[in-house]
Length: 114
Image 1: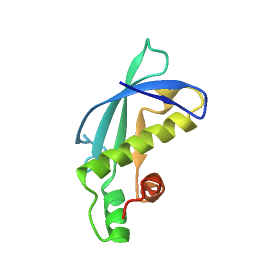
Image 2: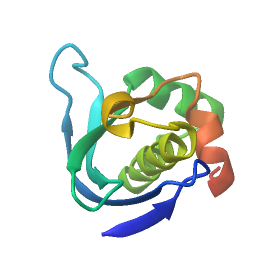
Image 3: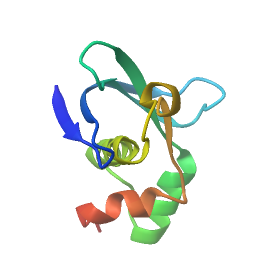
Image 4: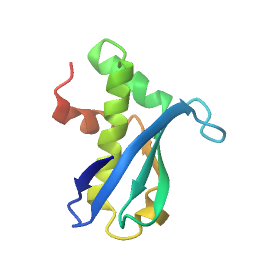
């Protein structure tokens, strides 16, 4: 169990459950599943969907594929960004988070990957 204090002031606890190929309608994406709680009473699953176009965009920009560890890092960064942005109702508004060609660079930029 890890703890993260979001920019919103909420303190979240979360842990990684696993990853799988996403079921339809997101087939082709990689789904990273985290269990999350903001109140230590209610735990819910949050899925981060790493879309194929995100992987292609990153590879085109950097000349190589993301490793499995780097893919997990992108998913975790997307989850933490949701903790920072969702003011209320993470359980209603943050359960399906997406990494696409538009946001993958921005998510991974703080990690300094080449």
